[in-house]
Image 1 (cartoon, helix red, strand yellow):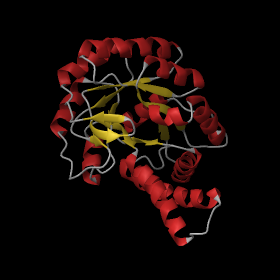
Image 2 (cartoon, helix red, strand yellow):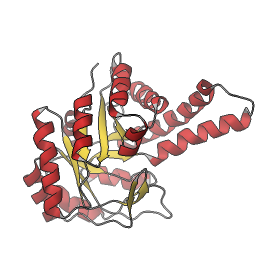
Image 3 (cartoon, one colour):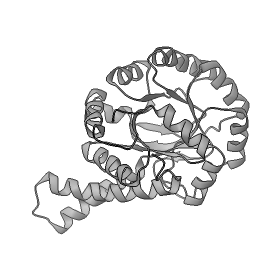
Image 4 (cartoon, one colour):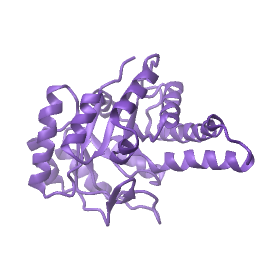
Length: 282
């Protein structure tokens, strides 16, 4: 099966009341674990890469690798640029064969964010590649992303932003944060409901690692169609390798500790797919 359109996956989730999990991957092993688990659970899934990950291995490498993995896969898999930090990177990912791109101009003034998103939509839309953008900012630090605190999405601004840009999905800021939470996050769920009333395209929740399961479920009930996970998978993969090397201090075969990392990632991915209700939705 070829890579699937992210827009197609999210519109089905929106129609049927579940969310598609979007997992950030850093290497071949994490991609393999995500696809293996999605296939076993018959769940549509999105693999994501961030700008710093693409600085480690470019989008051409990730696109070729994931395309090869899904060739015999019956489960819909999409490949997405997460938090694209420039017009040039968004176009490079689109040209490499990504299913969709995110352009993140959320730290820019409203009008500049609109202009940047419109530029990306003009190029990618012509090629049938969906575009995600963000209004408001998600707090915390993850990867090369850093924000001192969240700037909440205003519903009226969200409606204007979607209308003016022509984007296909909107990431909203309702109190989540990237990275590891120091306490229990408190999300503005009423704000999410107000955004849903005035925005018809699929809504995206970033910074979900560490958000309580019941809160994630309520966000989906209130209109979230795509849920992003990154930190949880990094921790799982690293824990698997660390445990293996502690138990086998003389080991030196990367395939062995890579498999241990993959096993932990599979368990993490399974729990998130079941939480978001996307199992058996392929």
